[in-house]
Amino acid sequence: MRKKRKILAVAIASLFVLSMLAGCGPDSTQTQGDSGTLEGRLASAEPITMTIHMHYGNINVFDDNAPIYKEAAKLTNVTLRGTASAAATDSNQAFNTMLVESKLPDIIHGTSTNTNKAGMEGAMIPLEDLVKQYAPNIQKYFDTHPEALRGSLAADGHLYYIPCIYEKGPAMGWFIRQDWLDKLSLPVPTTVEEYYNTLKAFRDNDPNGNGKKDEIPYFDRSKSVKNLVPLFGVDKNYYAVGPDGKIYAPTATEGYKTAMTELAKWYAEGLIDQEVYSRGSTTREQLLGDNIGGATHDWFSSSLSFNDKLKDLVPGFRLATIDPPADINGEVKNASPRTTLNGNGWGISKDNQHVAETMRFFDFWFTEAGITLNSYGVEGTDYTIVNGVKEYTQQAKDYAGGVPSYMGTFGSREIGIPVSLEAEIKGMNKDAAEGFAMYVEKDYTISEFPNLPFNVEENRVIKDKGAAIKTYVDETTQGWIMGNTDVAATWDKYVNDLKAMGLDEVISAYQSAYDRYQSL
Ligand code: CA
Image (cartoon, rainbow, N blue to C red; front, side, top):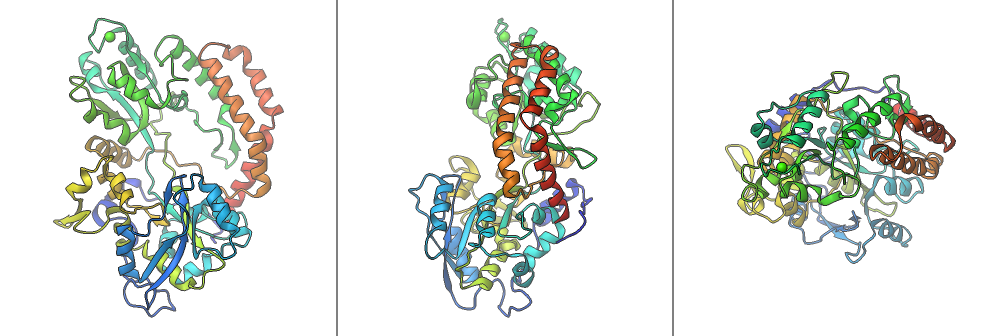
């Protein structure tokens, strides 16, 4: 593996443009390794059938009849048969039950945690040398995206699964009622101070025009105010990496104290939903549907779908994507990167008798043909090519739940693959596609916290002490925001309590895993 961390200085913007022009992922029609003599995309000279365990998210199982996999079988000569029961409702339990069977399925799909554990216990085989030998497209991807490989390695340094990978980009963004700004003749807020003043104007100036002071300026369905914390220059995660490469807990910094002091004031002034800690998942339906919600921070597709949903119910309704307001240090950044390694992938069991064929089959999903098949489905039925550009068919676009649901129904799964960003954007509604693309182009989303190869002991510390610390931070934060306790009066006790609960040990566990990650 690589000794030195290499950061690719390629701007997201240019990646985006490239992917829009050429489709993402390595371009190759050859899938054989240097020892292979197969033609085209074939993974096996003769048609073979292999078994696969796939059960994830407590609901997704492999579908033997999925059109996508029937097409893949035509292209590769490999047919898969699922072994997991659709009746099972607990993916972890299904994985563990599978592992004790006398003969394991050929291919094992699962979470990074489960596959790495199975690998280190001997149930799955290391793949790094096999990738070099049989999977040129996967190797090429890892060569150009070293963080995808490094973030997938187990604590023993081996690769046990090929990961499902998304391109870098924003997870969430900032959204505001453009129709309310227009009504009050206000510009889009660009700083924390302007954002604060805009929320105050929403509170005071009756933008919904019903003569009542019923507006809820900022709302958030996360049951927290964490999405506002970065406005004060503080990382919103429990643990972060400093510029010195040291892990620290942002919630124990002076910056967090400032953020809490300010946000408690915002809450007390009625700028933040008074029910932010209880309203939860249906917050947007309630507050946007009742025309009383003003601004939020959330996911693109689902948030901007309200422009379509409410266009007849709330006259003039328009939720707009805005640039992140500059934080108190003047930095404009989006603090909600998405997780590029989605946590699922597939690998090879110790009982697999077709290792070379399996690796070539895995490699197919890193070719343009494989990426297109997983993201767009079958040409003619699911997508067509118009002037060289792939477009989903009307049948796919009109499907209840949208294109992602359509593709899921026809067999698209979170397998080891680089998911097409172009397809993702095309699968969004128009407003979401524009907002998401704007965030990608402007490239102000911060780097994600890396996926660390924790060992057993580190995991134990994080589970035992880290979980209790998170709960304590959340409860204390809620007390401060709601005004039940005073930030200044209780801050020192809070920091001392965190230390007494083992914060330094948890940070050490993260640090050793992070140092290992850097050395792999
Ligand atoms: Ca009103």
